[in-house]
Amino acid sequence: MSLRLNINPLALRYLGKAQRPARLVLITLGTVVGAAGIACAVGQFFTHEIPFKGGEERALIQVSAPYGSLILGSTSSNGLLAYLEGHGDNGEEPSMRSRYVVRGTTGILNLTVGEDEGSLHQPLASTHRATSNLSLIGSGNNRYSDAGEVYHIGDGRDYSYAVSRASYAPSNTSTRLFLTKKLPLALDAEMGFGESELDLSGLWLQDLNLETGANQARVFVRSPNPGSMEKCSVSAGVGEFTMEGIGFLNTSKFDFNGGFGMYNLNFGGKLKKNLEANVSVGLGKLSVRVPPTSGRLQIIYDDGVFCSYNFAGIVKKRDGYATSVGFDQSNAPVLTLRITSGAGKVNVVYR
Image (cartoon, rainbow, N blue to C red; front, side, top):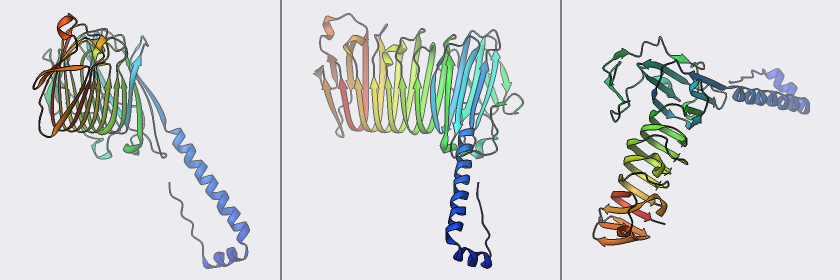
């Protein structure tokens, strides 16, 4: 909102003779304008519920947050697949569009928050990788499910808009998303610019794919996954990325790819089965922590010229191979950690 004051020369001469009253008027006017701005900013808050449609036995959740902050958690509500709340700063309205359909016994939620204005009218993109029996693959406006069904998206007929999309500031958008604990989920989340925090504790995960751009992201798993996963994939671009409680995911394979930044991976949580973890970093600092309560550890690594490795609680057996202390005297599940780093510093701690 802008305010323009047109004052003619006669008025200026008058203000020169009556400076104190004019100053009081301007201060009062500024106070009113400031208060109006605060009220407008506070008022841009929205909530949005996505209820079950009936018959869902599992769900595929696709979340895209190109700009702004994404906070993700869980909900125990019996009737809701997901619940959203958020706000836009600086008096601007947040942007969100969602699409929820049920195909057979699979609920499919495609949610986009914090887009740039130029892409608001574009069809939702097909982003989920074919990594599980919940995945979708396709191109253009057609989306194909694993059951062979084909349906068209992008015509706008079954989009639900929680708020007006007339104006907003994508870099100042904050959204909180809470997902159901009642169904097994395949979660695909893409986070671009901003600061994101994902608490996956309590979610029933069958497949997990996370991707970040240039931002700061934190992912937490504080309790065992009620389900079992074959693979978890994480791709972190530029910035800082932290993931704690990887051992709680109950996955057979964990793939991590980092570009340029600081990456912290904690494999806390007692392993129920052997876990293969492939960690690749381009340039930066990688810190890996494995509590002994998680299981045994063996490390296969590239000891390159431009990368330095520091180990604690780990015995180096030969070049490029190391194990945790007492590895051969235990029958606990094994975490096999394969590390590749272009240049930078790698710290691995087993304690």
